[in-house]
Structure formats: structure tokens, C-alpha cells
Image (cartoon, rainbow, N blue to C red):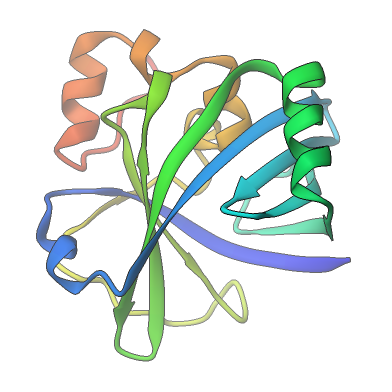
Length: 173
């Protein structure tokens, strides 16, 4: 088990694109979501993982992750995934001593771009580049398991337009 500590943000503009170090296509399907955990299969190139993540608020969550054969992952996704797949391009963007991962979603979540940063502790200081928008770490609508259940393409147009500017969407929208 590991403890994943990450913060998640909306993105204001494309200023981050000039700093991209590398990019990888990810495809993931959710096999189960309960009140206590989500079970996910992820494929990145020829590598694949089975992950179990705690369902809890805040930046720190327990996570179990296991490498599995890509062929097994593809079969699990085809046979067991619930809802649409979460497909994205993950761009790694170094900022000082840290590295942001910017997820540019495709498929049913096309148009959504989120920035994540993994930290050593929940209270760790980190750089906030100009392109970083409002924090959505605790907003479950932006968690990948929820995007598989309620894709961004189905959100109201006014909400999608505000998200695209990096502004946090109110709970009543």
C-alpha cells in the first residue's frame, strides 16, 4: 500500500504546453465503485495496472497498485468496465523542483483539462504557475471514477464553459 498525496486543479489557459517534457496516452476503465473504494484498470502503452483507491475526501488517499499484463487489462476493460472509458493524454510539465501532470481528456470527457501535483505531505509547499486555475481536489465531480459515471460531455454547457476558463464551478450548477 502507498499513500497518494495529490492536489488537483483546473487550468486557465494553454501556457503549460510550452513546458511539456513528455506525453503519454492513458486508457482506464472502472470495474467497481463503492462508498469505500474504486477499482480501476489502466493501460499506458504496453504497461498496465490494477489499482484500488480509497474513497475519501482530501489530498491523501490509500492506494494499492499492481502491474498486470496489458492483455489482461484490455480483457478486463472489455468485459467488466462500467460506464465510458476515461481516456486522456497525460503531459508531464516540470515547474521548479516539482512536476505537474496535465490530463487532457478525450472521448466523452473531451474539453476537460486538469492539473495534478503529487506531494510528499498534505502541507507541502509547491509552485503555482500562472496557468493553474482553481483547486478541485475535494470536488468529486473531477475525480476520474466520477468522470466514468458522469462524463464532462453531459455537464451543462454553462458549467463546461466556466471550467474551461479555470474557474471553480459552484455546487448548485
